[in-house]
Length: 455
Image 1 (cartoon, rainbow, N blue to C red):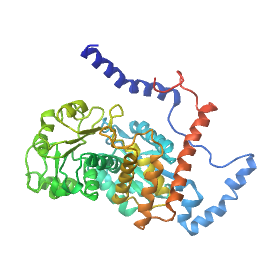
Image 2: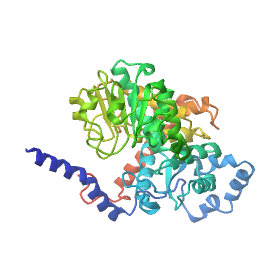
Image 3: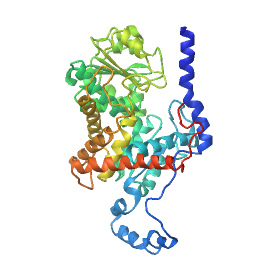
Image 4: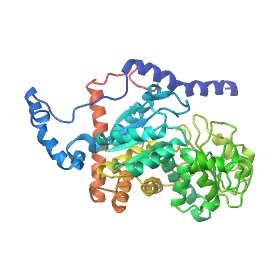
């Protein structure tokens, strides 16, 4: 087969999900719906589930509002909250167009974490108003998953809501991607015989994923002074001429400029990679954003995380040919997929089961360590540094690690043993998968035209 034919075939396969997504959107009319949790045998049962019986439940909750986390579905319900200002690779498409994405996220939450997640798309661009809307919604939900919000608004919104709400708030584009990246990094360092304290890391891109990733890297032992960050204008350093503007507009990026690159190295991506051990890129789709000759100037056995989608900043085979020992991407068709779906369903499973009041960076770090340990116990290889989505047993372990850290940090309302958390997580996750099996078997969810989705 010629290279042109091979490229055309790859392109056709890459475009297949778009075609199928439209076909099934027309058939199914959405991805999720509300299902009863309680039995109804006769209409008079509503005397218990609704009026008059429900009044007693309301009276108890009025006396102690936290009981809403025990007596209603709030204990297992989160909002997937967005304004649609940075949706996937589409940009600012607005709340209506973001809804299919939020539905897909809700389906992942249910299938992988047993969490009831509701898409909430709001027509709000002002970040302070966004915070107010989230605060208004708080009594309905046990947690909030922020999604697809432009930078730097996403930093302000997350930081403010973590301080002001009494339920866990998480931004998956920050902490989810960061958690999966750090999990892979922990094992990549083990394979290459490096200690976090001595490892030099270049971060390409200064958006949500990499700023949160840097924070988690610092927690696991990477030293800020051994890191360099690159934005669209080049390497960050404290005295860069535009830093005063950055300080006012994006204090989170400014903080990284102050903490990292003490030698004030200047230049772009090529200069940032020289003499580094690791590159973590979460920037713009490639290929060609990172060139093979730049990988060649890194230290021996470099580690390359090229996480842009749909095309990584450098093709994995190009990085390998340039000397990379380990390569990870955001794609499922290459080894070592850095997938935030390994993190967010289990993270929320854990925090909901102990009724946590927040999600801390340390909890996200524990989730990353649990992911890394799970892969290590199954045998690390250069093409296996992080679990795959098919390894369902990893989700209860991540949930337990998160919940235990919440209890240790004093942000949990409910205290359980590790075994209790594991068993609870296993039950909730397997329950969701059994529900799917029954719904398909009984054809309550109708079969797709060709009997399977991806054909």
